[in-house]
Amino acid sequence: MAEALGTKLLAEVEGLEMGDLLSSLRFLCRDDDARTHFGIPQLNNLIYGTAEQRQRGDMNWDMDMEDATEARTETDINVDAAAVHTDPFHTKDRLIPPTLHHTTARDSAHHQPNRPPIIELSSTAPGAGKTHLLYLLTSIAVLPPTFRSLHIGGKNSAVVVLDTEGTWSIKRLATIMADYVVSRVGEGVAEEREEGGIRGPGQQNKPTLQSLDLVLKKEIKDLLKRSLRHVHIYNPQSPSSLLSTLQSLESYLFDRTKHHSFYRPVHSIILDSVSAFQWQMRSSTTDSTLNPSSTPPNPYILLTSHLSNLHSLLPTTPILTTSTATSLHPYRSQFPPTWTQFSDIKIAVQRVPVPGFAPGSSVEECEAERRMRWEVVRRGRGKGWVYGRKAKGVREEGEGFEFVVRGEGVWFV
Image (cartoon, rainbow, N blue to C red; front, side, top):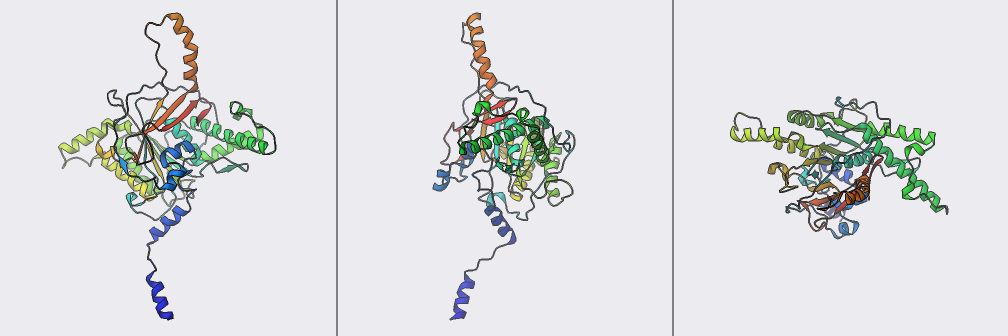
């Protein structure tokens, strides 16, 4: 009897490889699954769906191609960066090794149902707000979950940035990070006051870094310095430099002497922007097509291969940015199919446009409208929406979010 029972139980035992076990443990330990991955409810719901949609099982990555949206106009965003102390470890021309959360699971990304999606942010002109959105996402990713016993929603992770256009500003990133921390601290204090029967400050009266007492201000600046050490910025100057940088990231996996983030997970790998080397890569693609025996492999194939390898190796979210300059088919990719089929979610980003003056308007009428138009521009509002490939059954065309970019910071509305 006992032998039969033992045989039955043994038959029910399922063997797993160590990689499968570690992958399962990693998934169980994830921060509330995908629901709070970005720390921004509007973006989480847009990409991962609402709680009701997840419970119904609508969230699956069955992607379909859709028609491009109609043309939209954009204007540049001009912001004044406030002076905030930044991390001395970061320099513009220095290659800082990436941080990697060690794991031995090397399954293909396409066989990981719970892997984060690959996200592409696209715009038709500079100044749409893509990089500022990335500043905010990076800030949340590297900050701790709590500060002064208050929940600030940080992910305590690390971020790798490949800044191909040389536009990333550590000072601006620190400014946005400081505004986010101060806002969350103000919200936490307001909640404590309301629990004690005291009305907290309104949104229009939110505190600023300069309005805080000296002790708290110093603690926040120290927090920024500690957090900025986990933002690793590369500045590749050519397609070959970009590919070699991506290829070298894995070599730092277990080298704790190269960086400060060895025990942190990599939240995102940001490539801003893919369009920087578009024409060089297209030229190489044409050469490889005409002379397959005498030219190196297609650079887009190499790029997607390196990104896919990192995506399968790490529980990270690749975030890529692109720009399209055509007016006939805005947001229709100018890249080859190798690239256009790579991302899981495509999000178009633009500045909320200000309509031009009506035809026949007099100088007096234009002057009267000038103040109102400037007020719209000053608000710095932008919007994003899903287009192209998208998760089946979750998003409708035009569904998206709005955000604000100002000198003091970036926030969603």
